[in-house]
Length: 411
Image (tube, rainbow, N blue to C red):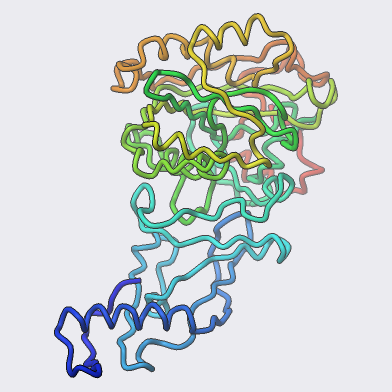
């Protein structure tokens, strides 16, 4: 909490305190009062955090500090990265949270409002708290892109849901192309931190993969939507998403290591989850995947704490160990994106890790690859092309006006 600027005269049994003691006492009073003041719930329109609700319920302290002889101080709308840009005088220095009212009350998420920097220096988002895999399928709002990784603005939020993007069937044989990231974390010995996805994951459960794989999302308190032409090489949105998911899945605090994250390349790929659900699988991935490499100190990596909803196991490996596991251990299964990345530059980038982390090996082009036969479903046809499952802006607007069950095949 920020200490109000105006000082308050405070006396003790020993008499009037000095100015330093006044400030200290003042801060203690504010902290105690902040904990005691009740909350009031009110509706704030057009505020999206997770999912696609049209508004969010916000709680704020009802008793202003002026009631205690202390000044209340409005919070500037710029602190909220453009999400809140009106009525800023309603916000006080008390903590504020946003809730997704689209979810069942038992699954609502409290999310701290952050500053507009890449990451918050004081707190994490509570992303995923009290949510299971089905909740996130419904509420996560993906960033749809075209084959050139230009953001596609869909008029209907249902079109952007994680569920819609990952639904594979005859009508949408490759789902809908969206943006993703794959984070590769290395220790000081240049070992890669591998993770095994939890068996409760809806798509590609139990497979081994890189450190963290997920999606930047729309309408986050800290903006995760990048325009590549403007955001490169900083890419704050992608890095915010990587920080968020590293904490959510592994308990890793990477906020102080954002500058060390090196963007390496982008891959456009698709894969049906045939291994889990059979040839008629209803699920798959279709992504423009941003590759991030980072080397972390031991004190950061030692804090790994697995979220059992996301990760079941971890392991540090040298490159030779990984190759042996991938090509000589038929009992192990791997995510299709990880195999594709490693065989299209991943091993080379790792072998030249110091140069890679300096940006020497970075490639800004988008490399496309089809999956291995093990990830081709019955409805994936030879006539499909690289643009199957890729929406243009006009196509997104057209689909947004129809019910999902009436969506025509996206070709």
